[in-house]
Image (tube, rainbow, N blue to C red; front, side):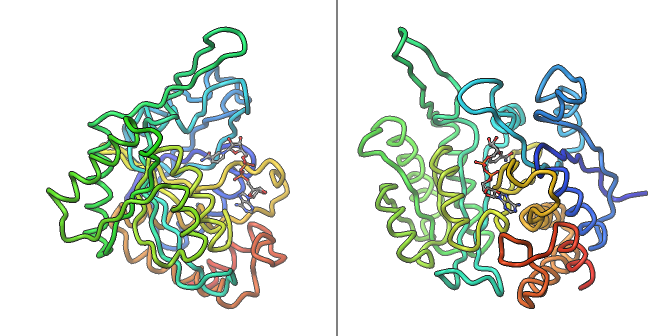
Length: 335
Ligand code: NAD
């Protein structure tokens, strides 16, 4: 009997390629699992379903509580609402956790980057409430609630404490958005003062924060921010350590967790078998830790760190020639 039942959403574009490679690595690394493979995104429509976020897929994640997800495509400017936003809201996956660290053997401008982005995942400008006031005038509503702001702040400080992190920095724009970002800041400050005064605390207006991130990312530890800022800063930070091929993520709620890379469906690479599966493999390692499978998590992390450090089998985004499956094979060969 497999020890875990995990929902797998292959997703769109490069999703099926990178999740298939990650699945092989996770199983070879010791994960005892029954995968429940279900669609979401454009793939669901291609399979004849009438919804990009099928009820069956949501129900399976609710039942099994854990999901490994490939990226899904969202049409730009029109079309269906983002599957990711729907999934995060419907399952109340309020905390996006995205570790960003310098990888062995991957040369970038910086060394020793080791930070965690904690992004509020359910509201802000991603509330999806948009309105045409009159032709030529449209609005988009930014929503901040005290409940969600306190919840994400508490999550970030608790995470920092449990992981022995020393500092939480809040990125905000409360000088302009005095009410919404003002509430986010007030809640972050309250949780720090009342519950976690032993953690260092810092507030930065996000524009200056971006400059400081580029000047010296090693001065940061845990970064806490609302939804849109977290989305943007995640890709910026990916660029500090080698790109979207090496940045994993988790969407955590009280009742379920969905693990997925920061990157999207990369239509430019889809079907070529050359995308880097590492970000999904790393998301899988986060999932293993969530499942208290630390021995497997350590084994897999050690294996891909070794492959990266040797530099012989790297995908194109990291300067190599290996394809998706060859990279996965190289990791498996290290077990
Ligand atoms: P993207 O992340 O798909 O790609 C940006 C760039 O990074 C591209 O040049 C791509 O080739 C490269 N890249 C991405 N992942 C890679 C990997 N694993 N290996 C090597 N190179 C990789 O972003 P985009 O092009 O802006 O978005 C494409 C689609 O993905 C859009 O529909 C967008 O809405 C969606 N998206 C989905 C998610 C998600 O499902 N979580 C996240 C971001 C974007």
